[in-house]
Image (cartoon, rainbow, N blue to C red; front, top):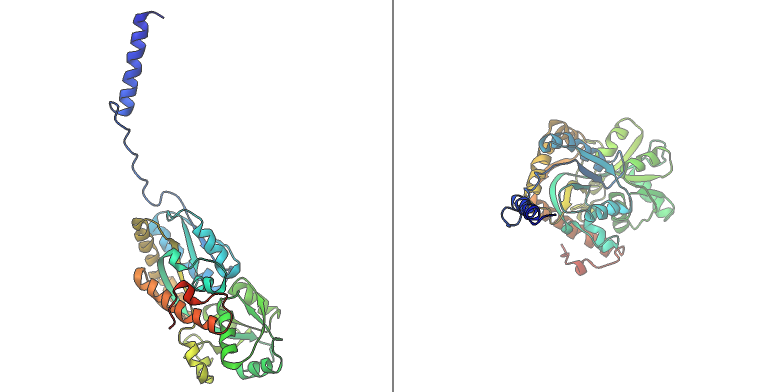
Length: 343
Protein backbone atom coordinates (compact mmCIF):
# COMPACT_ATOMS: atom_id res chain seq x y z
CA UNK A 1 0.00 0.00 0.00
CA UNK A 2 1.39 3.43 -1.01
CA UNK A 3 1.87 6.20 1.51
CA UNK A 4 -0.89 8.22 -0.23
CA UNK A 5 -3.44 5.39 0.03
CA UNK A 6 -2.51 4.82 3.66
CA UNK A 7 -3.12 8.48 4.44
CA UNK A 8 -6.53 8.41 2.77
CA UNK A 9 -7.50 5.30 4.77
CA UNK A 10 -6.46 6.96 8.05
CA UNK A 11 -8.49 10.09 7.23
CA UNK A 12 -11.59 8.06 6.35
CA UNK A 13 -11.31 6.10 9.62
CA UNK A 14 -11.03 9.35 11.58
CA UNK A 15 -14.15 10.74 9.87
CA UNK A 16 -16.13 7.61 10.85
CA UNK A 17 -15.02 7.91 14.49
CA UNK A 18 -15.95 11.60 14.61
CA UNK A 19 -19.39 10.97 13.13
CA UNK A 20 -20.13 8.20 15.65
CA UNK A 21 -18.79 9.85 18.80
CA UNK A 22 -19.49 13.49 18.09
CA UNK A 23 -15.93 14.85 17.78
CA UNK A 24 -14.56 12.62 20.47
CA UNK A 25 -17.28 13.39 23.05
CA UNK A 26 -19.02 10.44 24.78
CA UNK A 27 -22.06 9.18 22.92
CA UNK A 28 -25.35 10.53 24.24
CA UNK A 29 -27.16 8.24 26.71
CA UNK A 30 -30.18 6.66 25.02
CA UNK A 31 -33.51 7.89 26.36
CA UNK A 32 -35.14 5.74 29.07
CA UNK A 33 -37.95 3.51 27.90
CA UNK A 34 -41.43 4.66 28.80
CA UNK A 35 -43.08 2.45 31.42
CA UNK A 36 -44.48 -0.02 30.68
CA UNK A 37 -42.71 -1.17 27.53
CA UNK A 38 -43.60 -4.85 27.91
CA UNK A 39 -46.08 -7.07 29.71
CA UNK A 40 -46.26 -7.10 33.52
CA UNK A 41 -46.25 -10.24 35.67
CA UNK A 42 -48.77 -10.51 38.52
CA UNK A 43 -48.03 -13.07 41.23
CA UNK A 44 -51.00 -14.19 43.36
CA UNK A 45 -49.89 -15.65 46.68
CA UNK A 46 -52.91 -17.94 47.09
CA UNK A 47 -54.70 -20.65 45.16
CA UNK A 48 -57.28 -20.27 42.41
CA UNK A 49 -60.85 -19.58 43.45
CA UNK A 50 -60.13 -17.94 46.79
CA UNK A 51 -60.77 -14.36 47.85
CA UNK A 52 -57.29 -13.04 47.03
CA UNK A 53 -57.34 -14.72 43.62
CA UNK A 54 -60.83 -13.53 42.64
CA UNK A 55 -60.46 -9.91 43.74
CA UNK A 56 -57.00 -9.66 42.17
CA UNK A 57 -58.18 -10.87 38.79
CA UNK A 58 -61.17 -8.51 38.84
CA UNK A 59 -58.81 -5.54 39.20
CA UNK A 60 -56.72 -6.36 36.19
CA UNK A 61 -58.84 -5.56 33.07
CA UNK A 62 -59.36 -1.88 33.90
CA UNK A 63 -55.74 -1.54 35.07
CA UNK A 64 -54.50 -2.98 31.76
CA UNK A 65 -56.40 -0.31 29.85
CA UNK A 66 -54.66 2.46 31.76
CA UNK A 67 -51.24 0.83 31.44
CA UNK A 68 -51.65 -0.10 27.79
CA UNK A 69 -50.19 -3.54 28.30
CA UNK A 70 -51.11 -7.02 29.55
CA UNK A 71 -50.76 -8.18 33.14
CA UNK A 72 -50.07 -11.92 33.07
CA UNK A 73 -51.41 -13.43 36.29
CA UNK A 74 -50.21 -16.64 37.91
CA UNK A 75 -50.74 -18.35 41.27
CA UNK A 76 -47.60 -19.17 43.24
CA UNK A 77 -48.81 -20.83 46.43
CA UNK A 78 -47.29 -22.22 49.59
CA UNK A 79 -46.00 -21.35 53.07
CA UNK A 80 -48.83 -18.93 53.89
CA UNK A 81 -48.03 -16.85 50.83
CA UNK A 82 -44.34 -16.43 51.70
CA UNK A 83 -43.15 -18.30 48.59
CA UNK A 84 -44.83 -15.75 46.31
CA UNK A 85 -43.68 -12.88 48.50
CA UNK A 86 -40.07 -14.03 48.34
CA UNK A 87 -40.30 -14.54 44.57
CA UNK A 88 -41.45 -10.96 43.97
CA UNK A 89 -38.83 -9.64 46.36
CA UNK A 90 -36.12 -11.46 44.39
CA UNK A 91 -37.05 -9.67 41.15
CA UNK A 92 -35.82 -6.26 40.03
CA UNK A 93 -37.54 -3.22 41.52
CA UNK A 94 -38.74 -2.05 38.12
CA UNK A 95 -42.52 -2.39 38.30
CA UNK A 96 -42.70 -5.45 36.06
CA UNK A 97 -43.46 -7.95 38.86
CA UNK A 98 -46.43 -7.27 41.14
CA UNK A 99 -47.41 -9.05 44.35
CA UNK A 100 -51.11 -9.74 44.94
CA UNK A 101 -51.37 -10.85 48.54
CA UNK A 102 -53.39 -10.61 51.74
CA UNK A 103 -52.41 -9.55 55.25
CA UNK A 104 -50.10 -12.48 55.98
CA UNK A 105 -46.63 -10.93 55.39
CA UNK A 106 -47.18 -8.84 58.52
CA UNK A 107 -46.85 -12.04 60.59
CA UNK A 108 -44.01 -13.78 58.74
CA UNK A 109 -41.26 -12.52 61.03
CA UNK A 110 -42.82 -13.49 64.37
CA UNK A 111 -43.87 -16.87 62.96
CA UNK A 112 -40.41 -17.56 61.56
CA UNK A 113 -41.74 -18.00 58.03
CA UNK A 114 -39.65 -15.30 56.38
CA UNK A 115 -37.51 -12.28 57.24
CA UNK A 116 -39.76 -10.24 54.93
CA UNK A 117 -42.75 -8.07 55.79
CA UNK A 118 -44.60 -5.32 53.96
CA UNK A 119 -41.83 -2.98 55.07
CA UNK A 120 -39.93 -4.48 52.13
CA UNK A 121 -42.62 -3.50 49.63
CA UNK A 122 -44.48 -0.43 48.47
CA UNK A 123 -48.29 -0.66 48.62
CA UNK A 124 -49.80 0.21 45.26
CA UNK A 125 -53.29 -0.11 46.74
CA UNK A 126 -55.18 -1.89 49.52
CA UNK A 127 -58.53 -2.68 47.95
CA UNK A 128 -60.80 -4.33 50.53
CA UNK A 129 -60.87 -5.73 54.01
CA UNK A 130 -63.25 -8.27 55.39
CA UNK A 131 -63.97 -11.02 57.85
CA UNK A 132 -63.95 -14.79 58.07
CA UNK A 133 -66.94 -17.05 58.56
CA UNK A 134 -66.73 -20.42 60.35
CA UNK A 135 -68.35 -23.04 58.11
CA UNK A 136 -69.09 -26.76 58.14
CA UNK A 137 -70.52 -29.13 55.53
CA UNK A 138 -74.31 -29.20 55.21
CA UNK A 139 -74.29 -32.76 56.59
CA UNK A 140 -72.21 -31.86 59.63
CA UNK A 141 -73.58 -32.73 63.06
CA UNK A 142 -72.65 -29.22 64.19
CA UNK A 143 -75.79 -27.13 63.96
CA UNK A 144 -74.41 -24.22 65.99
CA UNK A 145 -71.09 -22.85 67.15
CA UNK A 146 -71.96 -24.12 70.62
CA UNK A 147 -72.09 -27.68 69.23
CA UNK A 148 -68.61 -27.26 67.74
CA UNK A 149 -67.14 -25.79 70.93
CA UNK A 150 -68.65 -28.52 73.11
CA UNK A 151 -67.34 -31.31 70.89
CA UNK A 152 -63.89 -29.69 70.72
CA UNK A 153 -63.79 -29.56 74.52
CA UNK A 154 -64.81 -33.20 74.75
CA UNK A 155 -62.33 -34.28 72.04
CA UNK A 156 -59.33 -31.92 72.18
CA UNK A 157 -57.22 -31.94 69.03
CA UNK A 158 -59.47 -34.44 67.26
CA UNK A 159 -61.64 -32.21 65.03
CA UNK A 160 -60.01 -31.61 61.63
CA UNK A 161 -59.87 -27.89 60.92
CA UNK A 162 -58.76 -26.75 57.49
CA UNK A 163 -56.29 -23.87 57.56
CA UNK A 164 -54.41 -21.97 54.86
CA UNK A 165 -51.12 -22.18 56.72
CA UNK A 166 -49.86 -20.79 60.01
CA UNK A 167 -50.84 -17.13 60.09
CA UNK A 168 -53.72 -17.42 57.62
CA UNK A 169 -57.26 -16.44 58.57
CA UNK A 170 -58.51 -19.95 59.46
CA UNK A 171 -55.46 -20.35 61.69
CA UNK A 172 -56.13 -16.97 63.33
CA UNK A 173 -59.75 -18.06 63.87
CA UNK A 174 -58.59 -21.24 65.61
CA UNK A 175 -56.21 -19.14 67.70
CA UNK A 176 -59.02 -16.84 68.84
CA UNK A 177 -61.10 -19.88 69.83
CA UNK A 178 -58.14 -21.43 71.62
CA UNK A 179 -57.43 -18.23 73.55
CA UNK A 180 -61.05 -17.52 74.38
CA UNK A 181 -62.56 -20.99 74.73
CA UNK A 182 -59.60 -23.21 75.57
CA UNK A 183 -60.23 -25.56 72.64
CA UNK A 184 -57.82 -27.05 70.12
CA UNK A 185 -58.24 -28.58 66.66
CA UNK A 186 -56.20 -30.83 64.40
CA UNK A 187 -54.99 -28.40 61.70
CA UNK A 188 -54.95 -29.60 58.08
CA UNK A 189 -53.20 -27.21 55.69
CA UNK A 190 -54.36 -26.16 52.18
CA UNK A 191 -53.27 -23.37 49.83
CA UNK A 192 -56.05 -20.84 50.29
CA UNK A 193 -59.83 -20.55 50.21
CA UNK A 194 -60.31 -22.42 46.92
CA UNK A 195 -58.63 -25.66 48.07
CA UNK A 196 -60.31 -25.33 51.48
CA UNK A 197 -63.72 -25.17 49.79
CA UNK A 198 -62.91 -28.32 47.79
CA UNK A 199 -61.76 -30.11 50.95
CA UNK A 200 -64.90 -29.19 52.88
CA UNK A 201 -67.14 -30.18 49.98
CA UNK A 202 -65.39 -33.56 49.95
CA UNK A 203 -65.65 -33.89 53.75
CA UNK A 204 -61.88 -34.14 54.07
CA UNK A 205 -62.12 -31.65 56.95
CA UNK A 206 -64.78 -31.01 59.59
CA UNK A 207 -64.66 -27.23 59.78
CA UNK A 208 -62.79 -24.25 58.40
CA UNK A 209 -62.81 -20.48 58.25
CA UNK A 210 -63.34 -18.85 54.86
CA UNK A 211 -63.44 -15.27 53.73
CA UNK A 212 -67.11 -14.32 53.54
CA UNK A 213 -66.59 -13.53 49.85
CA UNK A 214 -65.41 -17.09 49.20
CA UNK A 215 -68.11 -18.76 51.32
CA UNK A 216 -71.26 -16.73 50.72
CA UNK A 217 -72.57 -18.56 47.64
CA UNK A 218 -71.93 -21.98 49.18
CA UNK A 219 -73.82 -20.92 52.29
CA UNK A 220 -76.71 -19.47 50.31
CA UNK A 221 -76.84 -22.56 48.07
CA UNK A 222 -77.02 -24.80 51.14
CA UNK A 223 -73.72 -26.60 50.54
CA UNK A 224 -72.20 -25.20 53.74
CA UNK A 225 -73.65 -24.25 57.11
CA UNK A 226 -72.29 -21.01 58.58
CA UNK A 227 -71.85 -21.12 62.36
CA UNK A 228 -70.51 -17.62 63.05
CA UNK A 229 -68.89 -14.61 61.43
CA UNK A 230 -65.52 -13.93 63.08
CA UNK A 231 -66.33 -10.37 64.02
CA UNK A 232 -68.09 -8.27 66.63
CA UNK A 233 -70.97 -7.52 64.27
CA UNK A 234 -72.93 -9.37 61.62
CA UNK A 235 -72.05 -9.19 57.95
CA UNK A 236 -74.55 -7.75 55.48
CA UNK A 237 -73.95 -10.60 53.02
CA UNK A 238 -74.92 -13.19 55.65
CA UNK A 239 -77.33 -11.28 57.89
CA UNK A 240 -78.79 -14.40 59.51
CA UNK A 241 -75.41 -15.69 60.67
CA UNK A 242 -74.52 -14.55 64.19
CA UNK A 243 -71.29 -12.66 64.90
CA UNK A 244 -68.81 -14.47 67.12
CA UNK A 245 -68.61 -11.48 69.46
CA UNK A 246 -72.39 -11.42 69.66
CA UNK A 247 -72.78 -14.99 70.91
CA UNK A 248 -69.47 -15.12 72.84
CA UNK A 249 -69.12 -11.60 74.32
CA UNK A 250 -65.92 -12.46 76.20
CA UNK A 251 -64.17 -12.75 72.79
CA UNK A 252 -64.93 -9.20 71.72
CA UNK A 253 -61.52 -7.78 72.67
CA UNK A 254 -59.77 -10.46 70.58
CA UNK A 255 -61.96 -9.64 67.57
CA UNK A 256 -61.41 -5.88 67.36
CA UNK A 257 -58.59 -6.10 64.82
CA UNK A 258 -59.37 -9.50 63.32
CA UNK A 259 -60.01 -9.97 59.63
CA UNK A 260 -58.07 -9.74 56.39
CA UNK A 261 -57.16 -7.28 53.67
CA UNK A 262 -56.14 -7.66 50.04
CA UNK A 263 -53.79 -5.49 48.05
CA UNK A 264 -51.24 -5.00 45.28
CA UNK A 265 -47.57 -4.33 46.08
CA UNK A 266 -44.21 -3.80 44.38
CA UNK A 267 -40.70 -4.24 45.70
CA UNK A 268 -39.38 -1.31 47.70
CA UNK A 269 -37.05 0.82 45.61
CA UNK A 270 -39.28 0.86 42.54
CA UNK A 271 -39.00 4.35 40.97
CA UNK A 272 -41.71 6.76 42.09
CA UNK A 273 -42.99 7.55 38.56
CA UNK A 274 -43.64 3.83 38.03
CA UNK A 275 -45.41 3.57 41.40
CA UNK A 276 -47.57 6.55 40.47
CA UNK A 277 -48.49 4.96 37.13
CA UNK A 278 -49.41 1.68 38.82
CA UNK A 279 -51.52 3.46 41.42
CA UNK A 280 -53.39 5.28 38.68
CA UNK A 281 -54.03 1.98 36.92
CA UNK A 282 -55.16 0.01 39.95
CA UNK A 283 -57.33 2.81 41.26
CA UNK A 284 -59.12 2.50 37.92
CA UNK A 285 -59.48 -1.23 38.59
CA UNK A 286 -60.73 -0.54 42.11
CA UNK A 287 -63.31 1.98 40.85
CA UNK A 288 -64.53 -0.31 38.09
CA UNK A 289 -68.26 -1.02 38.69
CA UNK A 290 -67.74 -4.77 38.38
CA UNK A 291 -65.15 -4.78 41.16
CA UNK A 292 -67.23 -2.51 43.40
CA UNK A 293 -70.32 -4.65 42.93
CA UNK A 294 -68.42 -7.86 43.65
CA UNK A 295 -66.99 -6.44 46.89
CA UNK A 296 -70.35 -5.16 48.14
CA UNK A 297 -72.20 -8.35 47.24
CA UNK A 298 -69.65 -10.49 49.02
CA UNK A 299 -69.46 -8.77 52.37
CA UNK A 300 -66.20 -6.88 51.92
CA UNK A 301 -65.52 -3.31 52.99
CA UNK A 302 -64.13 -1.09 50.24
CA UNK A 303 -60.83 0.60 51.12
CA UNK A 304 -59.00 2.00 48.08
CA UNK A 305 -56.12 3.40 50.14
CA UNK A 306 -52.51 3.95 49.06
CA UNK A 307 -49.24 5.40 50.29
CA UNK A 308 -48.81 6.34 53.94
CA UNK A 309 -52.45 5.61 54.79
CA UNK A 310 -52.04 2.05 53.54
CA UNK A 311 -48.73 1.60 55.37
CA UNK A 312 -50.25 2.78 58.66
CA UNK A 313 -53.26 0.50 58.29
CA UNK A 314 -50.97 -2.49 57.79
CA UNK A 315 -48.81 -1.56 60.78
CA UNK A 316 -51.84 -1.23 63.05
CA UNK A 317 -53.08 -4.66 61.96
CA UNK A 318 -49.62 -6.12 62.48
CA UNK A 319 -49.37 -4.71 65.98
CA UNK A 320 -52.64 -6.30 67.10
CA UNK A 321 -52.26 -9.69 65.42
CA UNK A 322 -48.53 -10.27 65.98
CA UNK A 323 -48.95 -9.77 69.71
CA UNK A 324 -52.01 -12.04 69.75
CA UNK A 325 -49.93 -14.81 68.16
CA UNK A 326 -47.04 -14.18 70.56
CA UNK A 327 -49.18 -14.16 73.69
CA UNK A 328 -50.86 -17.39 72.57
CA UNK A 329 -47.42 -19.02 72.52
CA UNK A 330 -47.34 -19.67 68.76
CA UNK A 331 -44.68 -17.12 67.81
CA UNK A 332 -41.07 -18.14 67.23
CA UNK A 333 -39.87 -14.59 67.83
CA UNK A 334 -41.09 -11.72 69.97
CA UNK A 335 -42.68 -8.82 68.05
CA UNK A 336 -40.34 -6.57 70.02
CA UNK A 337 -37.40 -7.98 68.06
CA UNK A 338 -38.82 -6.43 64.89
CA UNK A 339 -39.91 -3.16 66.44
CA UNK A 340 -43.60 -4.09 66.37
CA UNK A 341 -45.27 -2.04 69.14
CA UNK A 342 -47.70 -3.64 71.55
CA UNK A 343 -51.23 -2.34 70.97
